[in-house]
Structure formats: C-alpha cells, structure tokens
Image 1 (cartoon, rainbow, N blue to C red):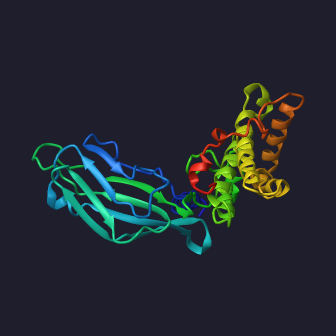
Image 2 (cartoon, rainbow, N blue to C red):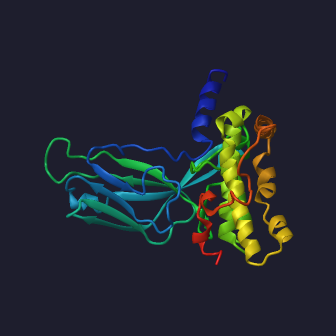
Image 3 (cartoon, rainbow, N blue to C red):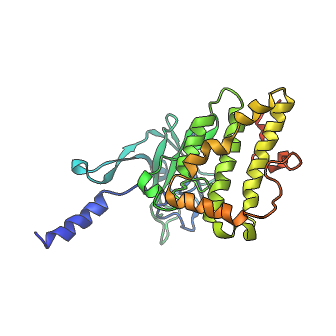
Length: 314
C-alpha cells in the first residue's frame, strides 16, 4: 500500500485540477494558420461570438465542414468531494467553409453562457495532395465573462489563492485584482445615478491602489508611483466638481462619492496588503505633493476612461 500511495496522490493531482487553465493550447503556432478568432486565451469574448480560423491555403472542403467542435468547460468537485475536475459539454452550432478565403467558421446556435470554453479544429487536410497535407489539431480555450451595464467581470477567484500574495489574481490582466473588480462592478454598475461614471472612477482607484502596493511601496516618493494614485483622486475631483456645477450640494457631492473610502476595505484586506499601504504612506510622509484632488488639478484628462463620453454627465 505504501508503494501505491505516491501513485494515488499523483493521480489525484492530475484528476482534481485546481482551476481551469485558460492558456492551455496546442497546434496554434502552425504556419498554415493566418488568424484565430477569438484569439487563444482571450478573457473577454462576446457571448455572440463566431469562431473563425483563416488558413494560408485551401483545405479539403468535406473535412473542413465537419472539423470544428466547441465545448463548455465546468469545474466541479472530484470524487467524494475531494479536489476538482472538469466537465465538458458540447455546444451546438453551424459550420461553414469559405473556399475563396480559406476560412472555417462556427456559429453557436444561441449566445454562449458565462464560462470557459475549448474550441477544437480537427481532421483538417490541405486540398493539395502532398507530403504534410494533414493539419495538426488546433485546440485552445477562451472565456465569456458576465456583463453588467457594459462592464465585463472576471471569474470569481479562489479566496485562498487570491490572498496568498499581495498581487492576488488578475485573470484579465487589467491591473485590478479580480475580487475587487467584481465587487466594484456589482456595487456601482447598476447605481441609480451615474452608474457607468462611478464604476469607471472606482476601477481607476482600484488599479491605482493595486499599483502602489505592488511597485516598491517603500520608495513611492522616489519612484513617483504616487502619481497614478493622484490621477485617480483628480478624476474623482473632476466628477464631484461637475456635480456641484449641476446643483448638487457640496457636502452631498463629497459624502456620496468618496470612492476610495468605499472600496479601501476590499483592496487592503490582508496584513501584507495593509503593510504595503502603510509603507507607501510612510514613503510620502513629509513631502510636498502635487495633484491629489485639488481644484486646479482635477481635470477631465486625469480620468483613464473619459467619463464625459459615457453619456451620463449632460
């Protein structure tokens, strides 16, 4: 039994995957491929997507019209509740092959649900009979996110893994920790007043906060990393100034739109993150800084997303 134990444990690690690995792929670097849509490992794919592969030369039509499968991947608990495994469900759709452009398309019969997907182009053959006419299988994954008022959410991260490091998990690589991004969008994107504007400002704050604690916070003044945080404050200041000019009472404008105070407990939620934030503040102590929400610095260009173009500030 002792000899079998390592084998059993190895099998368990293989069977019970920790999470769906979106970057898993094969055959995507073949010279015959011109383009793949969506691109491998894409994290913000539209639910109404059409899968497309363009090739450099003609394919044998009979195989091309049958050579695409799409599966939805769902992570579930393993045997007896231990570990995790992945279930696969085929997505129904129609396949077309355009001879003139050497393009295969797969259109799902209905919009894709939120989740991970794996597309496979297989059994493809070049039309010309020659050596190497068989195209190797092309397999890759992508993610269809939940969308709230135009904002695309990353998947919910595993809390334990997300809190193991200061950086946490950033699935869509936009500089914002996934748990924070999800909280902000759920909190603001359906707000009765200025939902898109408030979400955009809060996301900029979250990105700035993530940056200052992950880029040498002990030397924030020397490295000027505080400037990205000042920009977020200035963007908020610009929004508040616009509200006041529209007739909102000054105290209401400030009290009801203190985004940083609202999201701060979500961002600095572990000892290491709090410590990094303290180090950031200590580095700036005793220094004169510009920006930071002052009237002269709170201008439209300080917003990462131009909040005026969101159509809520008229």
